[in-house]
Amino acid sequence: MDIKKKIVLTAEEIERIRKDFAQLAEFDRDRILAYAQDLGLGLVKIRSYPQGVTIFGSARVKESDKYYKQARELGGLLAQNGHAVTTGGGPGVMEAANRGAYEYGGRSIGFNIKLPHEQHCNPYLTDSLDFTYFFARKVMLAMCSKAYVYFPGGFGTLDELSELLVLIQEGKMPKMPIFLINSHYWKPLDKFFQTRFEKEHMIKASDRKLYTITDDITDVIKAANRVGHPKIKDNIYDRFKKL
Image 1 (cartoon, rainbow, N blue to C red):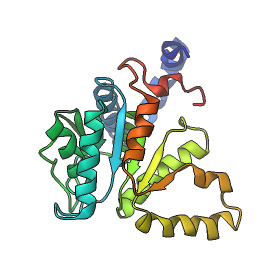
Image 2 (tube, rainbow, N blue to C red):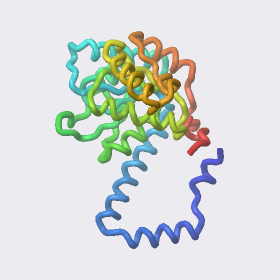
Image 3 (tube, one colour):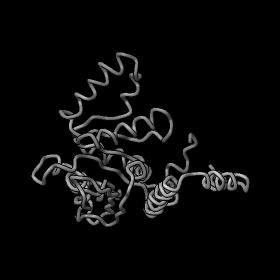
Image 4 (cartoon, one colour):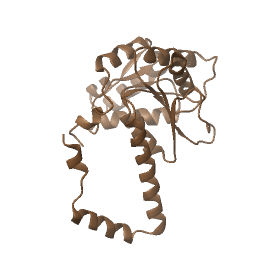
């Protein structure tokens, strides 16, 4: 795909955008510029390292929690295998995954956003960026990775999972490995998808194959190793033709 050709605008298109922008209300113009800043800074950041693995999960788990310990172990294993680890930059599962990568000396990235209960970056980041908007942050958490891991979490984790599943289901992003860690936690959700969504024809049976439920974190390592180590200039999204 010729990426440069796709993003170059004609003089007519630029003029139309200029006129449309001028007709917007002041607050809408400010909002668009703020969106652009979030997206632009994010793209600059993810273009500075090869695609790695994004790890999602609850910000509320403590260091003594089994999910924390498992995420920390996974972060370390990924770093040992040369994969960058990216999270939302906060505490809990995110901190644990970053910590594991950081302790091994790997690339540990955090895309943070301020929330009522989780407002600080964890101290185990080699790279970080603060986002104003959830949607821009989610775009970057997707584009920076070649595999995705979901530890137990709440509404935010479910939102991030649903977003990726829809994008892959509808062909809006490449099909990449998605792992749901801890079968006891995730199988009831999978059962709900089967007995409600699938049974009532809201999804296809094959849609439930977009993710893998596992208790073995080495499954993630194997999948990431199979994808390999794309070069910095060879983001998987650049080769994806279904935009």
